[in-house]
Length: 289
Image 1 (cartoon, helix red, strand yellow):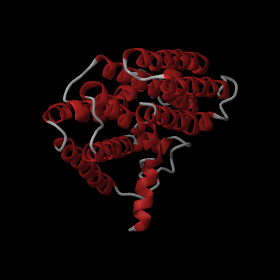
Image 2: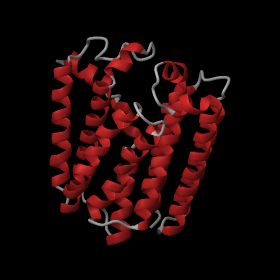
Image 3: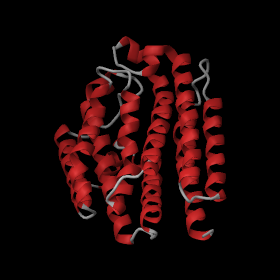
Image 4: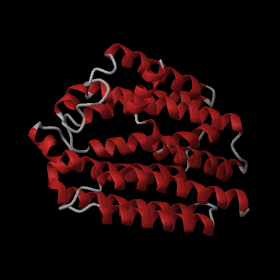
């Protein structure tokens, strides 16, 4: 059983939750303070955490299930749990059903609007796994899907949308799309050969990296915009500047002629960015008020 759990956690890359979870908490805290002048309750944060884990787990497991045929052909992914025979399809399907049940139950504990928006969230989670079969915009769809995390958390504690919530949503979506494009450069040759749609396969590695840089430039502008349309102060702005440096360094690491550091640019850099920005936001709102 312990071995199975480890395989499941490896399959869904549980550690990658660090990309979206800090932004979900950031959306919840900003929403509660901006709209209602209060902090989210521990219960609200707990249900948001559970909903996040359920959503991401379902999405990753579903992606691995749907892509098992493609993964089996790709030397980089052929040893993933399903193509390698470490997990049965029936086990993964059960895992997905449980994960979606957790997401739905946790959302129902928050507010009515969360329940009404649930079908959209589930649709986006399912849609992404199929997009690489028909559009190179699959990275943008992934960004929009993960970007629902802070937007959903904002709605979870306020029951409404605000311009700042949409800015946070769009900024996180473009950030995700940008670094997913960088990650996809690893499969450039495989995607072209096997007609898998991606921005690197469509525009080449050099073109893909320029598109990723452009998306991350807009990401930086989005983070800065939040400073001007909320009550965040200099501490958040300092965190934003550090985050922009991390974005710049990420693109310095990956060159069209040298993709050897894509893994470094992908997980450590982006995981650090999300934690840093959340930490400085928390410092701003918790300590400096």
